[in-house]
Structures are given as structure tokens and as C-alpha cells.
Image (cartoon, rainbow, N blue to C red):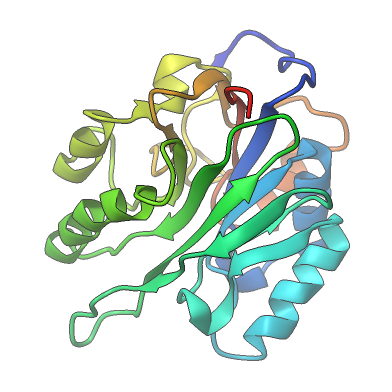
Amino acid sequence: MTTAPAELPPPAPGRLRLLSYNVRSLRDDRRALVRVIRACAPDLVCVQESPRYWRPEGQAGWLARRTGTVILAGGGRAAAGPLLLGRPGVRAPAVHDRLLPKTRGLHARGFATALVELPGAAPFTVTSCHLSLDADERRRQFDLLAGQLRHAELGVIAGDFNEHPDGPGWRSLAGWLQDGHVVAPWGGELTSVPQNPYQRLDAVFATPGIEVLACGVPHGLPGVTGADLRAATDHLPVLAVLQLPPG
């Protein structure tokens, strides 16, 4: 499903372009992945499934260099996969990464969180997350997300939630945060799988003090083709335009 408007709101003071993207440990077409990220022109990128085991810091650095960004938080073992990247000029004066309690036999997971300062805007927190496939563990992780917002009055949580919008954890989160695509639908809704999207697992949530101007899967952006989106990874990205209050 594709929703108007076709164009995103233009740049403005305090306006943030935030991209959330599961990159599947960089196992797919890296050139296509870089093209997608660059074409979205994000100020911040919330990455999920950054490589964790083989040279994780080096691979996170490779992704940052190729996309013209810098590492702000997470990456590799620091947050068990989630990673925060920002364009030069975006500051992260404090990092609050967190490894989560792990259920025996399941993957280690964590949150990549930073306090972020954008020129002309009030400081805010950003968390990138990739929640569990196990329903019980995932619900506990949803409950822990609230703690990541304690570092500032304003905040954004973005990621791969491994749950549908009618799931209990998602509904709980949407009860006190704005679900970006519901508030300001733009582009596509479904994020998995790129070859035949049939479910929405990825989202951007924001606290009420942040105005959501547009949010969805990007279609028709310069340099992004359908072939790129299918080749880059096994999820589609979510791009949001958010208006922050002045600092």
C-alpha cells in the first residue's frame, strides 16, 4: 500500500530525517544497501542486525564510512546488533546502550541509545532496537523500552519489533507513544519481505512532544529502485520526518 504525499517535507530548522533499517548483518548486496541509505539522506539511522561476531566494530565503521555517517552508539557487542549512525554535525553527548536479559537458547539482544543534539532543536533520546522472536521474551523487552526514554523529555524508538501492530507489546507502546505511520502515513506500510511485502514489523515511535510529519517505506526517492530494495536486505526501510521543538 502506498500513501500520498509523494514528496517528503523539505528541510527546516529542528527537522529530523530518521531512517530505521534491518540490514541482516550486511549479508546481502552491500552496494544496494548503501544506495538506499544515501538516497534517503537521513540525519540519523537506526540500524538493526549490525554484524555482531566477526569484526563487528570494523563492519559498523565500514557502513558508516560508505553512507557518509559516523557511529553514535551501539554496534557489534555493545548492544548486540542495534547501531545508531548520524550525519556529521549531529552530536551524541551521552550513550546509554543496554544489553538485555537473555533467555537460555535465544539470541542476545540489546538497545542502542544515545542522547542526541541537533542544531536548533531540543535534545532528545533515540533508541534502535530489534526485539525477540519469542513472544514472552519480546513482551518483557517492550516493557524495558520505556526506561530508555528517561534520559530526556523527548525521544524516539525505532526498530524491528518482530510483532504485528495488533500484538500486545506493540499496542502497549502505541498507547503512550505516537506510531509514526499511523499519525502521518507516507510511502508504504508493509516492511517484510521486500520481494512480496505482507506484514509490518518495523516502525518509528515518538513521544508526544515531537511532531510526526511523514513516516513510511520510501518509494520513488532518487537513486532508490525496487531492485535495490529487494537486494539490500530482507526488510524494507522506514523513513520518518520529525519536527523537534526548538532548543
